[in-house]
Image: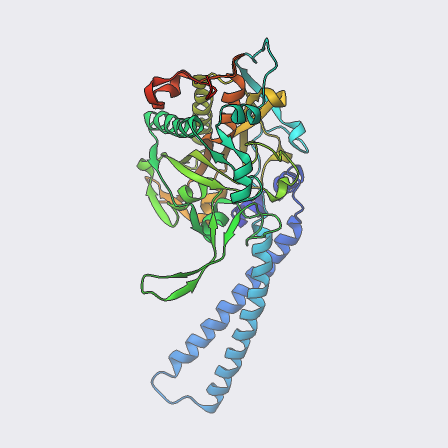
Length: 440
């Protein structure tokens, strides 16, 4: 969410940003509603002041019939104005949550993901002297993943990891955590069941409320009990990444300028309904409803240069993780039409996946500036005593499914085995170097 004063002063640029991000938003209508909102608020304040003066006047004496009538009229006017104000405020808030961050000057202008720009590539794509298998075939041959039982127990896109695949997933998570801790990130295991404000605040709702037709989020229907034992029904949601929980950890706080930047990383189970991906990648691990992930989150001062520097630092960590694993990858700078409303700049990392004969996304790095911190009310006090909203950034370190796909497929051998990346071997029992078929 942006500051309304900033919107008034940068109407032209925000109109352009909305157009380039494919957001259907009438900025002129928002500003017209804002004008009405401010007028009503002024009138309400004036009426409340009149009521207070009248109350003060009659504190020491019995009010006259004239004052009683005047008080009654003021009360009615306030009730009417409050109703009008609530109605206009609802319209105002609905439009305000749609207002986009103006993207960085170097963000490519484009309609959709076909206009994303490759800016970096690393590693040699493997050339096999045998017919390579997909991760689905390898998982079956090596007894690593059971998709059939997964679908039977969990439904569509369900799966069971087994044997070395379990160690491989946990090794990837520990490898990512170890790397991030060495880079100064504070590790956390955040809650994955969160309240509504955490998802709204981080921008995971398309509007100001959860919309099950659009938002790829699982809502939990449950009657809970509070600390007194009283039953309470409150909307709870399963997170699709640790980002909302980590950002919400800092909600409604005022940090000291000297404590910035804040660098935290979160390990969590992640849940995604994938309602917008119906019919896509229906087999295998590429698009699933639940997985594990290590996420990076950073808070910086409200300074573009500092946040850009942090953005690059986070991206470099992801690149380093892929290189340490030996996975060929590329980096894309995301165009305006493929960015969500709040993002200032965004990069994707994609690892090479032989069965797709293409690169597949394994992570994203995004800079939101103060779009999220305004929603979550996260500020810091400057050296001169002023309070400013922090800038917020996030980035995938490693998520479990797609790196597993890339490892199985890129490092498969002619004899059907799969070589385990050197950096992960210390987590495997007996220091094994490859995953072999169980009958060999």
